[in-house]
Image (cartoon, rainbow, N blue to C red; front, side):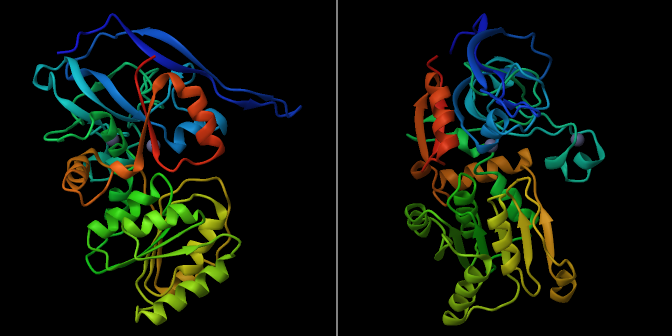
Length: 368
Ligand SMILES: [Zn+2]
Ligand SMILES: [Zn+2]
């Protein structure tokens, strides 16, 4: 059993990158290695020794792009966390766990009506859990939502960090889409951190055809091995050209032009334009990616198509054990999509991941 420390070692975001509105001058964000006290644990709370914390696009948004955190800096970022319980609630002691990226309040109307993934009082490490986040040696969290990892074989505990958020958000999105075996699916942005799990998840849930769309050919080739049946490289193509290629593929393969479920994972305008162009009769567009773009669409078409556009946020903690089961049974491959680095590289890793989206999800393991 690991010892309970006096202090939590952590990499705090002291200040995010900011831009002066008048002068346009950019002040670089600052990450600082520091120590914070181990708080008094409330009944039901536990202290988790962090094994790994994934670097998510959301963290980069907070640090570089002016997306505000709920708890104001200084705070520690990081919400994709796996680790071991070392203090608190006796029934959890010594267990290996995944900490859900969003933890609902379980008291409000949304929570009581099955929409707790979008609970307005939810807590998210590295955003709304006070100063605590995953890029730390330890983190205090409520135990009620933890997902216990059993029989992980020889997969390192740190790798399971990606189940929080990257691999579970697609499951919630598939539920939101009412995905059924035999459905035909498009994933716009199938090569991203969440997108590649989106493709794998819908395939594992029985999708008949999965068409992936993105720009990086190397990653598209990889997607063909993990979930996608066909890929369209959208480099230098507008939505109309992609739509033509899509329709050509459907025709060649005898696929219907109705009922497609389209997952938009990029959150950027070109991806949204492609997704909207593909939305057709009795189709469903599920918005999984977040961005600030304003994209034009004639919403009257929804009437003519009898189609839907819906959003999806996070994932209910109740679904975590299901997704973990899919990973452990091999119906979702995690190992090909994880890269482990020491946490002391956090500043360089952030800079690198912000510049070029990495091939694999980077998980930082505490070394300080
Ligand atoms: Zn994330
Ligand atoms: Zn709630």
